[in-house]
Image (cartoon, rainbow, N blue to C red; front, side, top):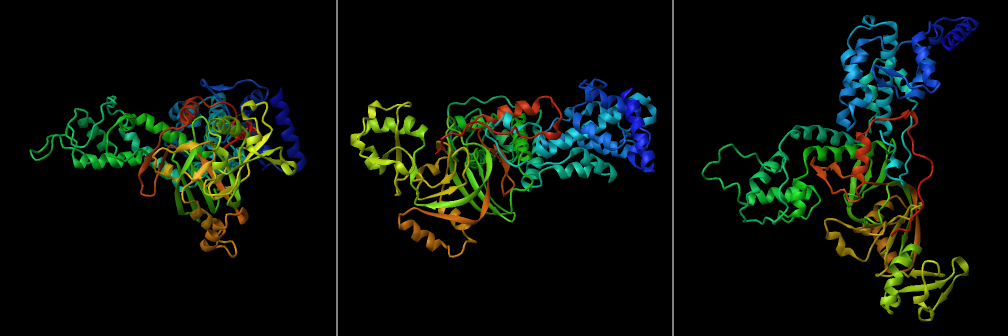
Amino acid sequence: MHGIRRFSLATTLCALMGTLWHPVCLAADEAIVARIEAMEAGFPVQVLGSRLMAHQALSAFYGANGYQPAWKSAELRRQLIDSVEQASHDGLNPADYHADILSGLALRPMSDFSEDLRADLDLLFSDAFLMLSSHMLVGKVNPQTVHAEWTANRRQRQMESVLKDALQRSDITGTLDSLRPADPAYRKLMAARQDLTRLLGQPWLPLALSPTIRPGDRDERLNEVRRRLSLLGELAELPAELPATVTDPRDYDAELESAVIRFQARHGLEADGLIGKDTLTALNLIPVERLRHIDATLERWRWLPESLGDTYVLVNIAGFELKMVENGEEVLRKRVIVGQPFRQTPVFSDRIRYLVFNPTWTVPRTLMIQDQLPRILRDPDYLSRLNISVYRGWGADRERVDPLEVNWPSLNRNNFPYQLVQEPGPQNALGQIKFMFPNQYDVYLHDTPGRGLFSRAERSFSSGCIRVEQPFDLAERLLASAPDWSREKIDRVVSEAQPQTVVLPEPVPVHIQYWTSWVDNEGRLQFRNDLYNRDARLIDQLRGTAEGDTRYNTPVAGSGPAQDKL
């Protein structure tokens, strides 16, 4: 009855408009109408055992097109099937897009099927396109289910309009490809993923993690180490039969050492040539696990805005690295120190608005109680040695007090009426510059007096903020378009040891990301340790079945409470 009413209303409107060419003026497919109305009423609709998922987008698409079949062309069906089968190149699961059913039926003439089955298949093709296009555009997983603090302006489209346009242009393949992130880094990682699939099925039994193998040693594990380094592209493949002049493959020779050092560098390890626990753990990472880390990174790319900006700063937490890009060219790359696993640096996007030279550091309340108070109790000279002032109260009414007059042992979380402020100077925890993008996490980029930590391979030592190596190089790039600012002026302002705030002529986007795999500028596939164990949660959700209508797959408004960070 509902389908008849809807059909009659469309016919009446067409008569009133005096036209029959509009989509709604064509005879509606009553089987399609019935299935759309069932979905709108909240009933699950399945086709050959596969449930339709994109309810809102399906209803909007067919409603705007007079409930007409959309997939009469075998060529368009073939394009969609090819795209679905290649979804694994993006780290997505073809089964989420009805691959098994559609592959068997795509090229058969629709006249082979009954009227009801034709309607079912048409809806199934549309559902597959709408789900895949949405996942290409904004990702399969809602990022806030993995990173509660995640914020960014995600890409938005009306997916039913995207489908209509693709059908009208007879270009399903090109439309879906255009929805992928446009950044070359995404495409490079896709290609690296495809190349890595050649290792699937290779034997990869775990190597013992001890003892450490040193150059010049002989060890039975080295034959397998050679094989894996060859498969991973670090070492030339050994022939089946070794010539008499070739070193015993169980010997740790110079050629193998060079390959090990390359492998270590590509995995963010100490590139010392020692085959110890960390290097053997990386060698034990089976190919499918490597693919899953790539899949997690590809998904995080799909969460990002359409454009990162003509000029932007990007921090990779897991890679302990910052880079600055201008007009598609990398102009700066620096090592960074990020938050410890129990004080993690959040993932979000914002804009750097101003710099502060010779900053003071007002210690966040959490750090005052958890970190500073125990140090003060242990060391009476701690405050004076680090040039930290004590204030009672907050704001303009605060009063400076003598630290010797404070009864420090009596203070605790519920009784701490003081502020600790470290004055500018070489020992200031923020160093001599900070880069500000005010955010709810109180996280920013800054200098540090502890520059020796930058030499470490794994650099998770902060309380959440990001310490930048050689930060004045970054300041110089950010101020390049500011009148009267030069490196000489920066050095002079710093030498004056007085706080000075400088607003950037144009705010610069900053993207703080968490990528455990990427392709570097030399085309080498890089891997890093999953420092915060974030990949595991994301991979589980990527491997799960797609759920719900993804047309509006956007983050939930708001996020967790702000955290005190340094």
